[in-house]
Image 1: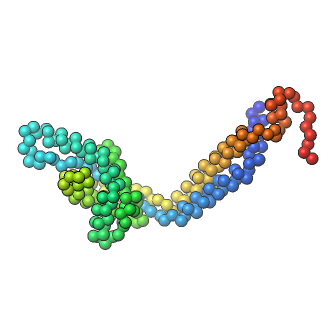
Image 2: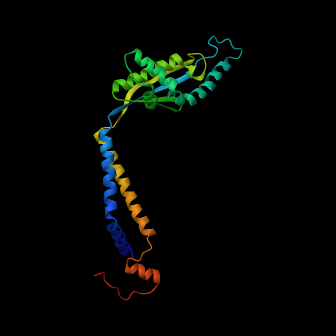
Image 3: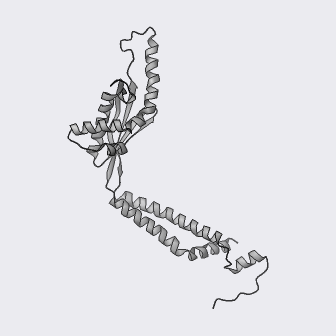
Length: 232
């Protein structure tokens, strides 16, 4: 029974060999051409610790613990909003202005797309995708300076008010694009297209109600097949 089913699947694949062959080839070729045309980029990452500054710096509050508790409580809300702040137009505009002051020009729209932040265990991981390692690391360093200078102004409060500690300096964490990445992506897409092509072949066969084989005739009628008329 297993051998018969295997022959049935092989026969099915032979019927749709053109679909099963062309779809992965076209998908892989288009993906490879697109990947090779994409410029090679680098990704840099840094790790920050962001804390709200003491509300009462002179510690004149009647309850000493209130000052510390207030700081840690408000810090939780700040960390929740940090990814949205890093991805905002206001943050991108401030970084663009700081870059231009150092002789570098990068549109704010590009900065917004390439800068990302993620909070993990109260640490803020900021990543930057750029064309060169120097551009990526320098942009991250400027992002730290902007956070220290602007601080709570992104929350509609006076500037400053945040303590930004650099735990891990900006370092290159990944390389995006290139021939190897394009080839790997093309192979993965071709394999996925092959699975889709086989699935389409099975679906078309399932929906096809035409009688094609003697085995189908016996299965549909419940009677034993005595003879067949050849095509020729």
